[in-house]
Length: 454
Ligand SMILES: Cc1cc2nc3c(=O)[nH]c(=O)nc-3n(C[C@H](O)[C@H](O)[C@H](O)COP(=O)(O)OP(=O)(O)OC[C@H]3O[C@@H](n4cnc5c(N)ncnc54)[C@H](O)[C@@H]3O)c2cc1C
Ligand SMILES: NC(=O)c1ccc[n+]([C@@H]2O[C@H](COP(=O)([O-])OP(=O)(O)OC[C@H]3O[C@@H](n4cnc5c(N)ncnc54)[C@H](O)[C@@H]3O)[C@@H](O)[C@H]2O)c1
Image (tube, rainbow, N blue to C red):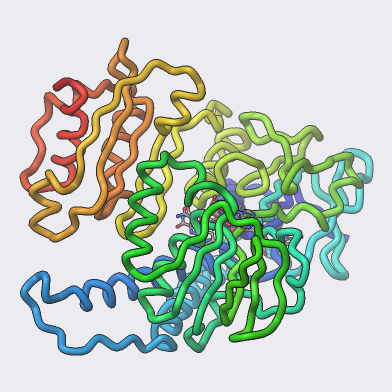
């Protein structure tokens, strides 16, 4: 039987840095992981998806090279090489993580599937394979997986999801994406640009349901122009093997593809953790309720990352680590009351922060809006990236920023300008009074803000 002051289950985006920080502070710490270090982000999420997207963007730009006055006679995609590049970036990051746990003073690492088996006095009892550990404190960072919709026939067809897509070695002939959210949009565009036929089947009335309709419209138009078929308001009834590989039945129609790609949301990995043994019961989609310091309803048990509900991103999981570091090693002042930006890495790229227009309206917030199409930005025209717009919402009384959307080249970087102003509590006048480099997309962001005062 082993003991530890703190056991962390899951070597994900919060678990790894927390284990490091606690070990560096001389604390007795054990990290349990059932699979590869680095969790979803490193192994099949952010890292490989952004690598594949980079290859796909290059292919798309090369095909349009004549617009920039450059002749590229033929553009060929070596799909296997694209995937190998992504996998080698994963292997590199994973290797660096493994190495860091071999260093002197590193946290103890236990390999295996952890399950909580109740309490021995004040301590939590955790089993991983043959090993049993007693811990004073428990941090759960077990991440999420692709949710499985209740669709008859699912187990009979060739399925791809946000985890096993990274194993592809041959280009899929025709991908049917179930769901039109972040994962579908990013990967649908990438696979299309790498040469697959792609269809998106979305139950809601627009793509990416959380965003404003003007954002969704630009994304839909762009994807359709690239040859992606999009079905909105679709109610899939059943799926079966047949035709090219998969047949999806919806509303009297049958869509055919070679593979079904499941992208209908996320399910927290809390179902096999044994949480009931300590009196914890996850809610919808497996999410565990926490307070602003990530405390669950059981004293000494904390939940971080995708399983704690709310935004499910690498940067929020990493910030959860900072909340717990503050609580365990510092003054505990840091909380999850934070401004959370995010992005959809399509082209044009969407950078977002704060309220969308429809959210502000629904919540009854008074707001003013400044908006500039990218076609009016000198920089966007110079670089041939005029799709999209930048818009910013501000409070009419204080001039403070309520939210922003940068749907443009490098939108994830551009939106950061608004994020920093929000973090500083500054109003839009700060931006308008400043001098911006010409020609930049930052200048376009300033012009969107200026449109508020026109
Ligand atoms: C395709 C894709 C692309 C993405 N792109 C982005 C992006 O561009 N930007 C972004 O911010 N986010 C992105 N995300 C989301 C991001 O990957 C997650 O939000 C983030 O990894 C969550 O971190 P986490 O620490 O909660 O969980 P994870 O990183 O998933 O770590 C959880 C770990 O717990 C382990 N585990 C689970 N159960 C047990 C158990 N019982 N015992 C032992 N170990 C266990 C798992 O094996 C895993 O290693 C993407 C996700 C996907 C799927
Ligand atoms: N750039 C990033 O930061 C990034 C990238 C990829 C993934 N992620 C993470 O993954 C999450 C996105 O995962 P996702 O795209 O699977 O979920 P999502 O919630 O973004 O989208 C799921 C979509 O599927 C639709 N849907 C649900 N059931 C359906 C059905 N039966 N048939 C058709 N459509 C259906 C929903 O209406 C919704 O639009 C993000 O919220 C984030 O946590 C982040």
